[in-house]
Image 1 (cartoon, rainbow, N blue to C red):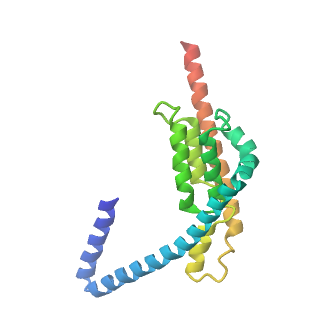
Image 2: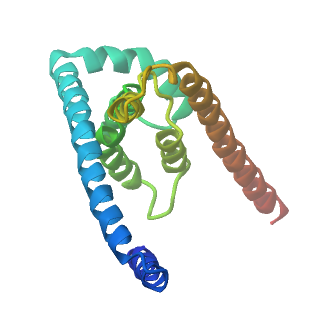
Image 3: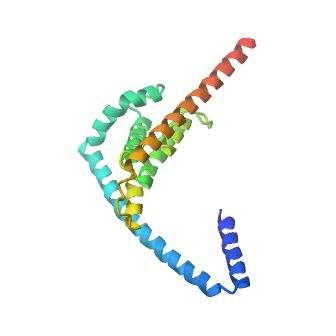
Length: 199
């Protein structure tokens, strides 16, 4: 990836030199860097807010209540996991963070959940690992705070008007992703059973 970006920068300077627009290219680079810092700072504020709320929810026991509310769904999606395991705890926190739209705020819980899931799979991706990966990638966002912050930072007149479309898109993308994983592993299990039966 570094080579790709480096190559694009070099190519842009070559074409800028050919067209006699080096000054404009350099100015655009500085403007882009300035805009990038401003956007990052606007994201940092909203990320700090939601990470702080998530930490408070964890310390106050709210995450335990959320875990109990989500457990019927998690239990059906991950039937082989112990409901009191660290993996389930991290999965619940990750889902909670994604529901709040914290973006990168969900990453630490996701990494810890994957580490716990990897302990019992013998180095191969298990059904639980694949399912959790697609659930984290195609997460349903109840409050898409990162996108709202980005729209607000760029001067949107109504940064919240994308909430309903995001609910619809994220719900169906999550549903399709989960169904695909379940169908894929059902196909793998049936294929394995048929092979063992043939032997």
